[in-house]
Amino acid sequence: MRLLPFKVRVIKYVCVGRALGTPVAILLVAVVLLLGCTREASYPNRPISLICPWSAGGGTDRVARQIASQLEREMEVPVNVINATGGGGVTGHTRGALERPDGYSMTMITAEINMLHWRGLTNITYRDYRPLMKVNQDNAAIFVREEAPWENLDDLEQAIRESPGSLQASGTAFGGVWHVSLAGWLLEADLPADAVTWISINGSAPSLQELMAGGVDMVVCSFPEARSLYDAGEIRSLGVMAEERLADQPDIPTFREQGYDWTSQTWRGLAVPNEVPDERYQTLLESVESVITSEEYHRFLKNSGFGSSGQSPEAFLQFLETENQTYGEIFNSQAFAEVVSQRYGPMFFPSIILALMGLIILTLLVTGSLGRRAEADDLKGIDYTHILLLVGAVIFYLLFAEYLGFILTAAFILLLLMWQFHVRWSTALVVVLVIVPLTYQLFAIYLRVPLPWGLLGW
Image 1 (tube, helix red, strand yellow):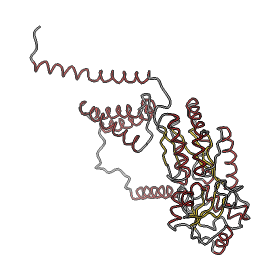
Image 2 (cartoon, one colour; image 1 turned 120 degrees about the vertical axis):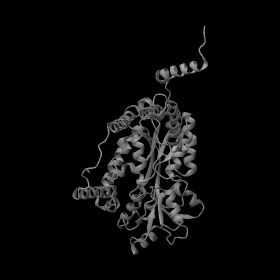
Image 3 (spheres, one colour; image 1 turned 90 degrees about the vertical axis):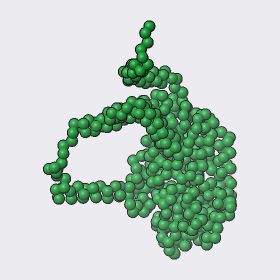
């Protein structure tokens, strides 16, 4: 057999490789997809997110992290607590309800889920969640600095009467459960609900820091949230809003003992988005139930001073329905009008932006600036092609990302765009192999932005 010259053979192989490049690439993608389809699905097989609507270090965060730690051992996958704060609980509760219903996210919902929509801050309610279990309940208490001049609630009431609005308090965001707790006591004491100025802070931990810095005069929160400062002698409690004295703090009187018929508490519970498949919901429920009923969890509650209040999904759902109705009556009453109202509503700033945009468009119309200039060039056909291609890429991502996953979808779109712009295949492949994984690593791993996993699990 006569051999071809070396140079001729190289050119021949290159030409054949170019001719077969696209079919081979398509074949490889098909093989990968088939492997993904035949892979046995197991749940869970990747990290689970536990969304906490409140700041790190607060009571909700501490309970969430304890449960996450135990769930990791129970489910044998990482469980990451994500503090999605802002908007007085709106951000976290909304994000949790709108998460992908694949069983890889759950939310530590709190009493604010039954308050926010009554105040017109969101349309998210408990009905947007599928409850797992109620995991904890704590009564409110009022805390002041150790050197504060008030020894009891009577002293504090007198100071408020002498100078309404001069004292400042915090513990959570405006209109949150601790704000309502304070407003309820003020109304019980025959004072206006806004006789104490409420400073909106997202969580008890930063509120207590503000108390120690002298930024506020008192903090309303649960006793476990303030326990470290209390045990250190930095703060005192003037009373607890409970039916009876706390078992681990028998020296602190209740509000009723001091002549005020008022109790208030908060609760915490786990829930998932509504459309989570039944089999995955059941797996989560069994794991959560195992954690909540464990000796380790109850020991954590006792040592930290948290109240135990586990409830089944059915009992928890009934509790949510009843409390939602109760808060509806409270926030719609005239007495709580000051608590519900805010100086700036959630649509205040968006309305300003829309008004400015309308003003700009009106100005452009009046001055004729929106008219087409005579010297303007027409778009070339290739420009329309590029625009349609970009729109098609977005539509393709929306339609197929959930099924194929972010990496495969993004890789296909990026290859398609570079092919359209006549980028060499070798360069395009290198760019895709570098850019797509780096993008996924940045957003999904480091920034913890939920990205579609797809049939391959990545």
